[in-house]
Length: 392
Image (tube, rainbow, N blue to C red; front, top):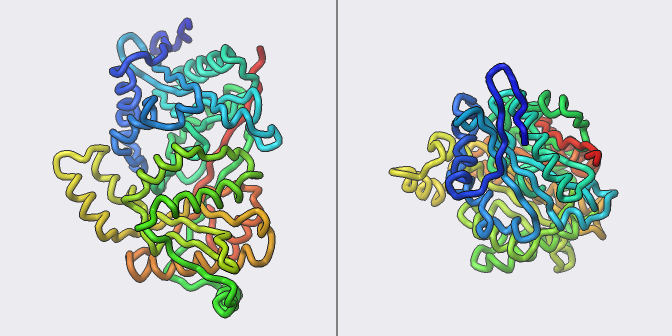
């Protein structure tokens, strides 16, 4: 594609076609975000794995093209363009559906570079027959969806995205309009929940039909399958939902296993049937931030030591779900409050945590927003997924 010219020279965009270029694609993020005090460098091997076919199971159901932007020899930007065939198979009412492609992993030195990259990603999606784009999504909806639009001053918690405050204006200038807002909520977990919520919890504790249990790590694979089975059912009508594949379940399990704690992930059973779960992860980013993306030479030892007995300021609740048949019932919110409370007690007493972060939550998910409000949490970050029609 011909470059867009700007005051500082022609921008040329080329597809990533070699191992070295894939490494350069990953490296660019570390370089451009180096001076952002809130950016948390991911472990380099994980960042590379994300964009490598054969390593990330997303590639099994998606077509992906990575692009690099250069001025002369210098790399000045990057973007991924992708079509998730599980997403295009969904009902359009849920946001994705036939003809919808995505781009993500955008990093750019300036607006001219960002515009050239987005234009190239759109061209590629058009060439593949797409007629609409939802972005940014990096790369699966389950990974890091949305562009950060508020909360730039706080580092992201584990598995949340963080992008430059420059980008929303760049994206909107290319004709993108808001499609869906995602929220994260934070709360002080050293305080007990309001009296009303405590009454709901204690009445649940007196109900013999309800059992809240931690997960059993010795049956890790079975527990992971159970949780994802509830998740796939609970979330199946949500905006942007794409089901997890078996290989993705196995991959996520392997990735999460080191930071899974039996007393931080709860399963709620009703009459002996597992009907809800809440997953909480200690914020690994707190220990990763000073490591600069590398485990060498001594960071391995630090990380292993921390994983053995994590002490952590923040806990993140990335996922929770209640089986569809119970949704919007009083029982559903009672189970949610009970799980949150048990996790809160354990997080404070055993891990020294003081802060919780819940999210992301779709801003129109009334049930979850109501729960977040009831426990007196407040929005600390907002992410935007933008949409744009692709004219032929």
